[in-house]
Amino acid sequence: MVSSFRLTQTTAQIEKEITKALVKEINYTFKSSIGKMISPIRRIVSSAIESSPVISELNSGTLRADFGVPKGKDVTSAIVASVAGSTSIEMRRFSSSGKKISGGIFVYIQPTNFANLLSLPAGETITEKGTRLPWLDWLLTLGDAVIIADFGVEYGSSGRSGQGHMTSKARPFKVKTSFSGTAGSNFITKALESHVGQIAKVIERSI
Image (tube, rainbow, N blue to C red):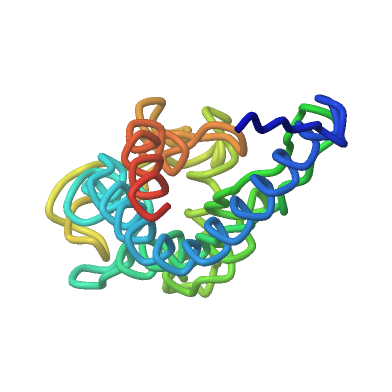
């Protein structure tokens, strides 16, 4: 007995149907995987920021003295938590056009306007005279610009931080080049650069 088959669709039509079915499966798989990604990615972000040299300096180094952070006050936990908490994942549904498939998963970390950070009470110091020192804004956006022309920091066991005080002898004041940042390049972006691979692996494992 001899059997014969006749295709009722062209090769192009068959390829289109296969691509359509593949896109449907991809959308289902990716959508159901997003929930598994957010927590481990936020943990990676938290760890990356915590290990930043800037965070270390704010805890016990010269930056604490530079910004007049009161002795014993924790200002870094809120920063780390805010950056990690800003992490979100967006899925752009996959679609096909001919043989081309477009779409993907996008991970967003830290709004570029820094609104979440600059609204933190921990990110500023209020002097005894009531002057507001928005040091986190300085640290993230002003780079090496001179911030206070008439005063600088003299280090020693004095001042609110217990590590230094402002004096005209040390003028002017600006954030040290090794820690200064701009909107496009700062301690947050630098801390995350070396962890992109880890984040990619979380996405791969989740899918």
